[in-house]
Amino acid sequence: MIKITVESEGQVVDTFIFDKHEISIGRDNDNHIIIDSLTVSSHHARILKIDNKYWLEDLGSTNGTYLDDQQISTAQLIDNHTISVGNHDLLVHIGAAKKSTFTPIKTVTIDKKKPPEK
Image (cartoon, rainbow, N blue to C red):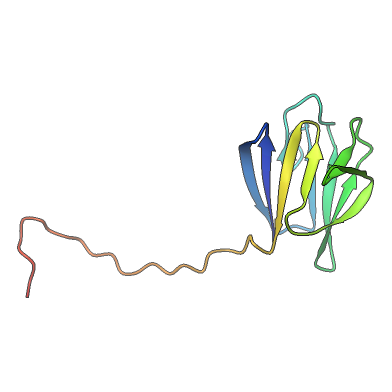
């Protein structure tokens, strides 16, 4: 699984958790991660999962795709990488996005009018 937190100007915009082989990023509504900004191309970039590794690929975007401040065409993603598209940062967390294994404990209703049993 991969967790992606989208930030703009240091503020969290949205967080996504995916278990897909392809994740599209762009301005158009048919993307998995939609970033409504003119600095982002309609189909800006994508993340591919191949053999349990994640790869970032620029899709010929106008303003480029950056990985930790370096412009890329294709690059492997690792945990804590930062993808930059337009004026948005996407923080990548790989493996930390596991589903919760929390098991709730039995719910007990407390009657405040009745004294507790001994």
